Image (tube, rainbow, N blue to C red; front, top):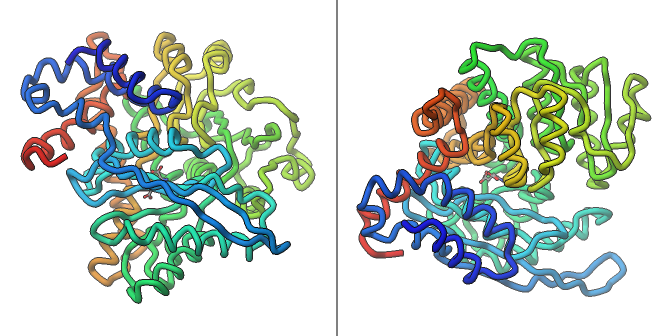
Length: 447
Ligand code: 2IT
């Protein structure tokens, strides 16, 4: 493959889509040598084929707000690749959502899902609907209208959406109810369902738990342990919550969390059941502010308008949104002695940030490896639905742990450089690519 030509071609074919171009460039740069060592991939034009989603569905979502006014939003589902299983990936409801956001997330999802060891293709969807300040009735009417259109394109063996930013158990419930009403089928078409109606134990915790299991692998690779390590995370939503729970359980010291309004520093540690439960309660309000945390707990201080990355730590984990950690943030973390940076949000770091961290020899995990525990546990939910069974907590947790270990091993296998540094970005991209690419070759020129 000709790296520069493909990067340029991607820019020309996807103008005005910086996120998609950023995600593609990172993958192309890291798989290039591997692809060129294996001519079959060029022969079958696998890379070129992966740069085009199989399908982009874009639709209008109209709904009526509490004042009786009609609202118009945009809905999306990008079905990127189905080579190894049905399209699978979350739905994001956030005002920043564009076709670009959806395309980059669907592209990342294909590689991530491949890494999980489970048979899932890649997709992503969502809307520019802003849940902030909406009543429950408004959220329900929006979800119903969104699903009325989306249901034409999904199904338990074709495409299985789940949650992402702005879409939690409540929204999944409203959308599942509407799917059932329209189709008359109680099937595993969405994951992240409630426990009583087909959901899986551990799914709410899974992204955070998985990320910490992955972090344990990174620490073990450096003959290091998690106990007592000073950690900071961005965000206070579902992913940050699951991460905080597992960090506390394993004896790490989480001292900071953040929101769009600033960050919270708590030198006593955000590690008690009360504090962690309050993160979840704050998130449930969908008001997007973390400040009330400092009003509730005396040991917590609020720093308005500041980014959490200025707090000295050994371990930093991005748990909010793409490009939330930039080159300057990375420099500040390095100057303060950070040793491990884990992207738990999808593409949480800019390309400059990744370069800074790698240059400084910091152990850095990309989102598609570290946050794969969420979708992996969605895969386990699909298995349970297909079997009409529900597994015990211990079984799901054990499978999740096993999957995260296997992703870590694969990153080490394909990402270890001559000087011993583990380039997790390269390892994850190559390992994710191989499975999808080989499946595409085996299935002929279909997509
Ligand atoms: O980014 C992600 O992997 C998710 N939002 C979870 C997707 C899923 O299908 O569980």
